[in-house]
Length: 308
Image (tube, rainbow, N blue to C red; front, side):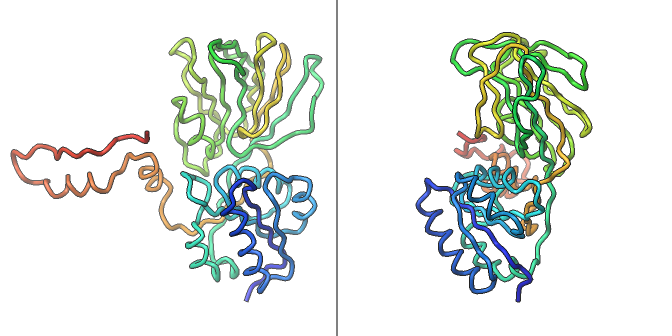
């Protein structure tokens, strides 16, 4: 028995397996829920119409599909369940097999809802007028170069104070969720996913002293290019907006959150160790087997210690 009245299913349109599985899920949910709809995650106009009143949105694809869903549901309190179709993912919770096993739990609401901080993103033109409607991001906002081989100068302000002009490929402003994305690849810290902090990470800065910053949730970060040409803003890596001199983006924590369904199958940091190849079960087993044997050297295993 389920109290759900409306369920949506988002799928990645370029993954045939995702489209097929979304259709299968539609039929399975339709046997228990009166209103079930299916949409490509790349069709925002249709999904916006259907999202009103949707209590559960199942995302079939990967992290990118979940990111699109998190932005699309604002301001609705829709819960999001990510189903991974085989790629490395941090935001998806179940595989198709896992959802099959947990289907009754999903219908009955036997899960935990994890609230993730989102960013409120506002663009301003060179005359300081707001250029677009406010946007939202679950992962990050980036200001960076669009061409190879030439760094750009980026003004970085926090709460109205200029903290520096950074010469780099880009500057990333990320949530705790986004701290395992582009920010991490640029040397940024990993935050607990429910932390309400903002991370500011320079990408390939000319000076090594340009270290990442971790800011409290009430901070306002502004990025602007020091010159026009070859510079653009990006939101969650899924939209690019050209930037000109004196234009800027202001980023703060949003009043809206992403509500991700979790089953507490494994703590976040245990998952993180395996996904980043920090924790290799074969290496640990070999180390434990040799523990307490004087004179034994550490086992030599042909196991990479980082993801290729």
